[in-house]
Length: 115
Image (cartoon, rainbow, N blue to C red):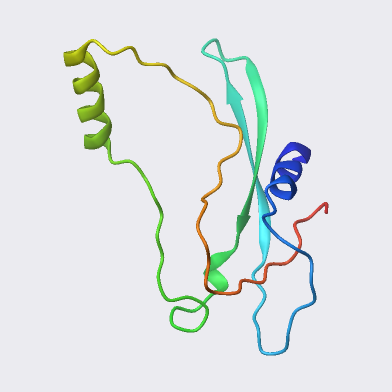
């Protein structure tokens, strides 16, 4: 949880402020996961901060939603192309990911528990 908070602060994800009048506050919570090795032993504990977006209303709090994900067919095509061309593939684990996009909306989220 500490490493997640440090990564969020290091990337300038938020700034603490007071809630302006007429704006709604989105809650948040921590989601915990235990990553296991192939033999079943614990590799590491992961924590992720998620917004409770179900409190938002479409057309009032947001206009569009977008979640970049890879479709399985895209992964199959990439693997087939790599096999056909003799490319080597490497697996990597990413500790923190951030979408680098400018938001035009102002979003107010309550501080995460433990901050």
